[in-house]
Image 1: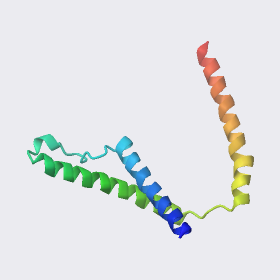
Image 2: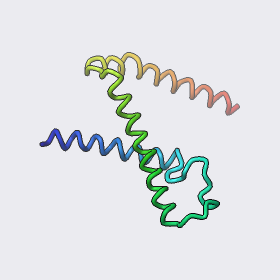
Image 3: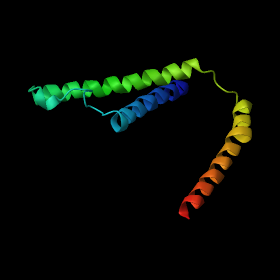
Image 4: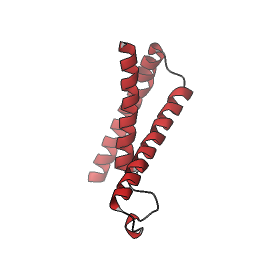
Length: 108
């Protein structure tokens, strides 16, 4: 039962992340390319349609999350640690030094 709750919480996290992404970056309940004010429909109907649009955008992102997760193979723990220590940390240090150099160069 604990594993079921863990997996269920993971899908809830995907859904909440999809809602947050669609709200912050993709217009939330706004219908794409439609001006709701010029339609002249009832406000309650527009609220229901807007909620359905928000859910559709969130489910699209959940679909994308699942698609990526099921398509790309997972790393083993040793592969992930090797990637982090031998690739990502040196890249982060190079990025930090390059950013500092650019900031110092632009300050003059």
